[in-house]
Length: 196
Image (tube, rainbow, N blue to C red; front, side, top):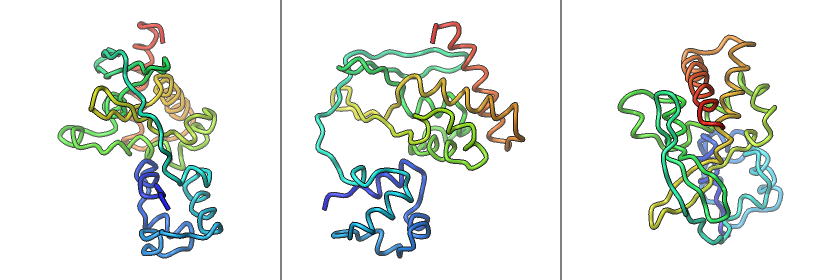
């Protein structure tokens, strides 16, 4: 079977150990899924918040970039792309950097899952669920020539900012969450200037 459990765990910021705990399976069983039962697939899908069909790798035509540029918002620059079908994409790494999800040297070592980790925090859940597409935010994989890009639809960044700003008004945020919320305010002002 061509399963993508490990990849989904990485995108969601979940370890295989955490998945094993949520499903009641062993970590070894999770790591060696070769011919799982339907019940096992349902448990895994539920724990990951995806449909059973999403667990299987799909052979898709690669999505290609037809136009690229940079979006300048406040004190940050985010690489942006337009795909063949007209979808507007922002670089996942650029979004994470613009939201100040990491500092200094760690900013260049990001694995792309930090966004999913922050959006998955329980304290933010009441604010995130108001934006349906943030509930299961998945990167869009596209290619600029041979360069693989993990990005997100451009409007997702504005939704994230709205959610963090609403949370800031309503609950006590943690230190990193406050930094992100402050940066969201800067980005929202930038959105207004560039017409997003």
